[in-house]
Length: 311
Ligand code: FAQ
Image (cartoon, rainbow, N blue to C red; front, top):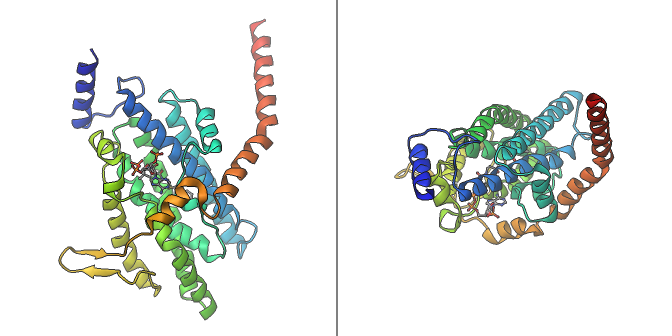
């Protein structure tokens, strides 16, 4: 009976036994994973676009090669994650259609424009930095295929974070113009990076249940605080100023206190009204339409081969 199955499932989760694709799982657990993992996959794929803007503009060949490699890694992450979604019985194309129709979300951060070369540094340092903070605990997610995918993803994300910090460090140690470019970029990316962790815990609809199922291991606010604590000293090290007048180390708590996030801005971006939402979704739709003939040809070829093999 269902109740006993659910109890057995929760016992396994509590004992840290991974849930695998063919194991019993409650419907709501499956749905939550399909939602989170597919949205995560969409973020990796849409996340290539802001950086793609700089492939043809990178300042030298070395920077261009590194940037291309990083963007390819993000494509790989998207593919692992779509495969993880398929292990839950979801159809990959359906989840992609949900992205294109606006039904499925992807990270708010990728709806901001990349205006200067310093933004490539900022995306690596802050965006990948925030992504790692959120994804390292996901390596211990109760769902086996997601947890295992995250191990490799996190290794690659830490390289991305380091390459971003290296770009920013070079600029911060450069000429006055380069320093200003880095600071201006930090001013634009700081707050949207904090928004990546999602709404405050009190406003987060899914956190409590996802923590009980050990999909999430930390709350949104816990991870945001960890990110602030790790990143502020890095900014200080290279002489950049975090654009938050309320930012202050709190001796009592041992953490940095920081200012209030503009939640109106966050929800506007999440609901599709950010600076680049239309452009990002249009680019993904166009990529699907432009590549359709390849998929159609591959399908016809596969059918032809199958017919030939039957004979
Ligand atoms: N943007 O109840 P919660 C990367 C939505 S890293 C948009 O707290 P949950 C690497 C949320 O979906 C970025 N929507 O939800 C890279 C929910 O709406 P729904 C991707 C957001 O799931 C770097 C509603 O608000 N990482 O791509 C955002 O428990 C550089 C209520 O929120 C992941 O996806 C947001 N920022 O917690 C690539 C990690 N925050 O779904 C290229 C996996 C919240 O009911 C370049 N995901 N919402 O319609 C997670 O850890 C979680 O899903 C959270 C949200 C923490 C994102």
